[in-house]
Amino acid sequence: MALNLEKQLLFGTNTPPIVPMPQWLVIPNLPPNLGTIATLVYATLYVLMEPVAGGILAPFMLAATAYANYLTSAYPQTANYWAIGLHVTSWIAQFIGHGFFERRAPALLDNLVQAFFLAPFFVWMEILFRLGYRPGLRSRLDEAVKKEVQKYRASKGQSNGVVLNGKANEKVT
Image (cartoon, rainbow, N blue to C red; front, side):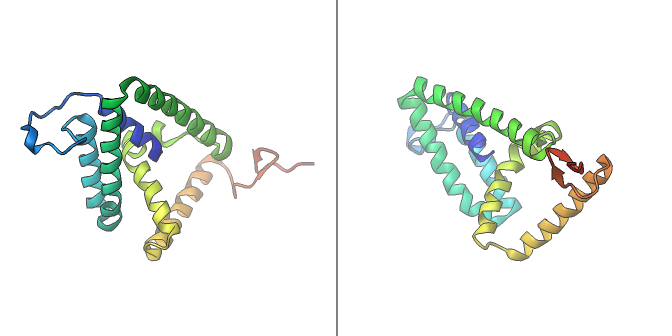
């Protein structure tokens, strides 16, 4: 999902500057277009949600947006073709992954804010957790997720979610 965020920001870099600014105030490759403004909004909200993790992610997001701005100005057609191809491929892979491996619909169908705003940050937090970031928070989140999965399975009539022969809770004879 994080790759989807960067492609969406690349699409936003195709817009002209939204806010007119004097040239001396514009940072190279970060004009005030939709892509740059969206990146600043995402980065600010991520910092507000989790200051350290958001503060580490923000420079990466700004650098990626600057590079996207460069690509769309230097190679507009090629950059957009690649972005569209990656975008379509990523969404297909996501729907196949959710349908085949998780056997449930992606979050996109439940909540657009979660799908487009929180999912990229969730991926970033997972990376940081694997590197040892805030183990207490990770354990609390893992417990909360286990409870939500149990509630979801109970609502769907599944007991323990064991998958045998491609079907939940069905024994192979």
